[in-house]
Amino acid sequence: MQTCSERSESIPLVDLKKQYFSIKDEIDLAVKRVLESGHFILGNEVLSLEREVAEYIGVKHAIGVASGTDALHLSLLACGIGEGDEVITTPFSFIATAEAISYCGAKPVFVDIDINSYNIDPAKIEGKVTKKTKAIIPVHMYGHAAEMDEILEIAKRYNLKVIEDCAQAFGTEYKSKKIGGIGDIGAFSFFPSKNLGAYGDGGIVVTDDKDVADKIMILRVHGSKQRYIHQVIGYNSRLDEIQAAILRVKLKKIDEWNEMRRKNASIYNKLLNKLPVQLSKEAGKSHIYHVYTIQIKRRDECMKFLSENGISTAIHYPVPISDQEPYKYLGYSEPDLPNSYKVASEVISLPMFPELKREEIEKVCEAIKRFINM
Image (tube, rainbow, N blue to C red; front, top):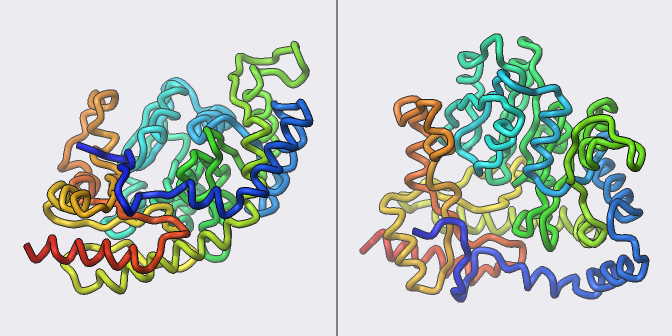
C-alpha cells in the first residue's frame, strides 16, 4: 500500500519542479554564489539564514542543523533529557518525533489526539505526567497549530520543557505569534516537500534560551566550541551552505506561498463541504496546510480510484507510532488511543502546493464525489 511516496499522475501530490522554475534565476545565483566562494560548511550563508529565521520567528537564536530529526534530538539533549526520563508526545506523527526521544535514552509517553485538529489533546496530557516526565513535544500536525496556551499551562505547573515539533508548520501562527517561538524550543525540518523546503535534508532549532542555543551549537559540531578541542561527545549535524543559500531565497516567499496554500484549502473546503467526509479544519493563519488531509470511509478504495483518474494521494500517517514495531514494547493498543487509530485508518492527503490550480482542485473534488456516489 502506498503511503507518502508520490506517483507520476497528472495532478501530483506536490510539484517541486513548478516551484523551482518560479524562482529559478534567484536559486541558480544563490548556488553559484556558494560554489564560487569555496566555503561549503557553516559559513556566511548559514549565519545569515540563522539571523533571518530568528527574526522571522521572533526569537533571539536560531541554529542550523542537518535535519528536522536532529533538531528535535539536539533540543532534547540541550534540555538535559536522558536515560530514564519520559517525554509526552503524540502517537499521530512521523516516527522521527518519537525517535528523537529514544535517541536520548528516554521513553516516549503517548497521549491521544483531538479528533478535529489531529493535534495532541491537552485535556489528556496531565493524566500522563509522572515524576519521570521532563518535557512535552506537541506536533503542529499538517501545519495546524496545537493548543499551546493549555500545553504551556500544564508545563509550567509541573516544571516541564516544551519543545515544539514544527516540521510541518513553518510560518504558522498561534494567537498572532509564530509557532516555534512559543514553547522553550522550536524544531523545524527543511525536508524538500515541506512548505519551506531545501533541496536536500536540513533543519533548524529556534529558542530564546542562550544556554540551550550554545549547547546545540556545540553538539552539532562533534561537541566542540573550538576546532579540535572537544568538550562533550557530539554529532555531525551541520546545515550546509548550499542548502542555506537556497532556503534564504525561499524564506522571502514563504508568507506568499502559505497564503496560496490557505486559498487552495478554502476552495477544497467549499467544494467538499456537502460530502460525507471530514475536512481539514479551516483556521486562518493558525494553519498553513503543509498537506491538505480529509477523513473518508473506504480510504484505500478511494486512493485507488483517484489514482486511476490521474490524481496522486498519500497517507499521513497510516499507522500510529505506538503501533510501529520499535514501540510495541510500550504496550499501547487502540482502546488507549482511539482517536489516533481511527484517524490513521481514514486520513487521505490530497494534492496541495502553492501553484495548484483551481481547475485541478475541482477535478480532485469531482473525482471524490464520483467515488462516494459509486
